[in-house]
Amino acid sequence: NAGVTQTPKFQVLKTGQSMTLQCAQDMNHEYMSWYRQDPGMGLRLIHYSVGAGITDQGEVPNGYNVSRSTTEDFPLRLLSAAPSQTSVYFCASSRDGNTIYFGEGSWLTVV
Amino acid sequence: AQTVTQSQPEMSVQEAETVTLSCTYDTSESDYYLFWYKQPPSRQMILVIRQEAYKQQNATENRFSVNFQKAAKSFSLKISDSQLGDAAMYFCAYRSANFGNEKLTFGTGTRLTIIP
Image 1 (cartoon, each protein chain N blue to C red):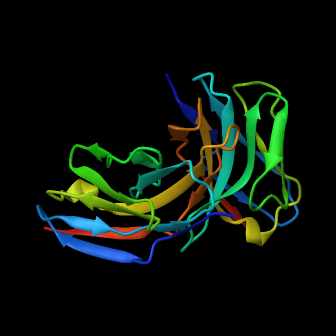
Image 2 (cartoon, rainbow over the protein chains, first blue to last red):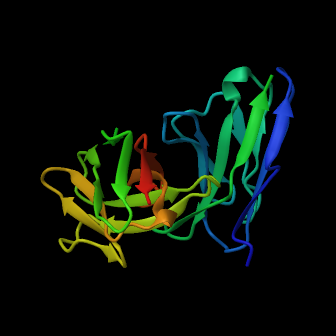
């Protein structure tokens, strides 16, 4: 049972490049979400999904896109990376919203 | 919108002693969940303890317990018999109990240092 798997763990991008952070869970959880963590701040919600085909914006959605074509996967896309998107990104999943499982984080640097 | 405030950016405690981390929150909802998460240097987010707002009894998990004061909107974490492995960032978080609203709102964290 792998839990929540995020790839890549580390990535360096140039300004304007695009990339996708992958997130997969093998627990058949309906709820999945993406957070970013910046120094001196708690985690902030980017986008979330309550099931396949359903997504919604969180607190800081600008510059990011998501889709949920399957229950297992919830990729986060950066269409045109900006230095302000340098952060640590966490994917999370939950069956019922009570116990939330986090991935190990993805370190993204935009230069 | 809900807010979560952790007013102690850093705390330290002697090994084997007890420490209390503070958290306050603001909400107009009556039913919700509160969490404490631990983030060690590896950055993995680890659930420490969870409290349902409709339960008056304070949650406990081994050496970890909470003091939940609903009227005061306070949710502190007490760590007893502190161990070196407890050193980490601790985040308080809030989640509405409304169906489909599993979004977590986090505080800014408290860095806990354990002094040997």
